[in-house]
Image (cartoon, rainbow, N blue to C red; front, side, top):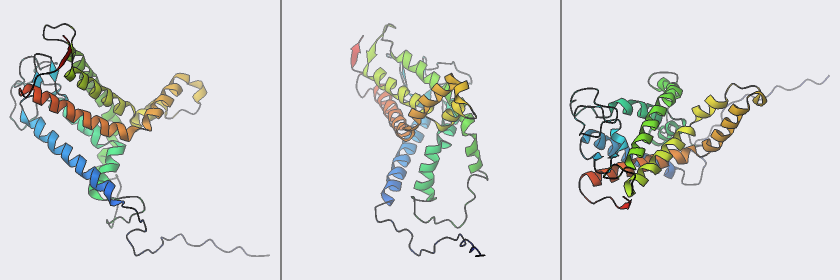
Length: 268
């Protein structure tokens, strides 16, 4: 009787080079790191600026200050009212929403992969050797907080609804009737991008169709899951588009509120 030989031991190949890739794999990480750094610096300056966030004539409120619940908020900008008296400059006016929005974005499956690679080089790219000696994954603090992403998704929904309300207010003209300006269109594009990013979330996809053993018994959830899956394929694109439109919307409101130019009106 022929004796079967044992399977070879599964050991890593000893490769001296950092990687055998010949393409410029480092470019992607540099671009992502640069874009995220620019956005974070801009957003940080804006949320602590405390000026030029509200255009009363056309009811334009930048998303970076929504909801404006501080006693320092200018008249008309407090959608939900002023919950607290004036706060020190170190506290953003929209501190209520910023915590949830940051939690949702930072724990996003795409974003965490993007900044892990771009900033922590864990690893910098596929088939590239990781410089870190050990890797505990997301099992320890602070990275274990990433597991709260689903709950941040629940909290991000009310924020998206509030931004949608702000857009509806932006379609009011100077006399309070219906009106359309370039600013209201930019704000509409931004809120559509935010909803697309939110609904294309991996957690949203799992919530709608996860744990189902028989799709045929749940036709509504199955249909919803298929639609969310279509959006999920473009989650990375929606993540970047929503960031770009957020910055564009805030910059446009800033320029209007500072008097740099007037809002081109299409109707009323």
